[in-house]
Image (spheres, helix red, strand yellow):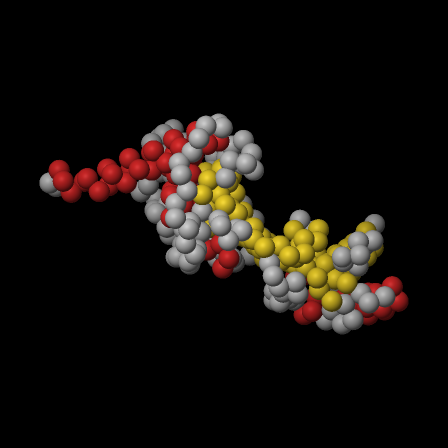
Length: 298
């Protein structure tokens, strides 16, 4: 190969190295690089990871690469798909999104999406690739809210992205990306619901929801994935709430769900690995909290 053929790769590696150094300086409180020109984020394909790339430490590579090879993937939320770095080999192994609700609490006018990336690249390289992609989309480094060990980015449109590297012994690096944004639609459409959940919504109005999907590699396990949907529901009156819950639990019993003692609000159907929690609350923003989880094997 002619020496000049390698120059583009060398230039990009140098650029990523400098960007990684800037991120480290930012996380330590030093001035960072100036923000890139603003632009509207666009969707981009997720890049599958290659077993040929990764850190140079050969001591842990066999086990780590074996874990990576076995790990399945999930589709990232549409809201965050275009923010994932196209130049970083990775797998998306977890996702979540929500509107009007976050961590089981009402958040009217707000929405979020997350994705957990698994990569064989070194932490500095991975963080630099994310920063390069986000700044290219008009985000700028936001030192005002970043916690130690993470990087935060802000967009003029009000969107924010927080990137947190996470290490688990014997596994590849994980990057947790969390995107938040204002939401003008205060009554957003609901995600797909199981028949048992959808059947109980009569007389109740959803004011917030969140959903998540997790794929895990566990040797010899019969369950590899878990999907969860949570809802905050509002009733027009206490009497309407009581009537709706009575009809709902009657329908669950007919569908072979049973209460798991001592929790009267927890219903389960072991044959399908499904659980549903129906819990009245005192929060005026949501009279009933619903959490539905299904565990399954691919």
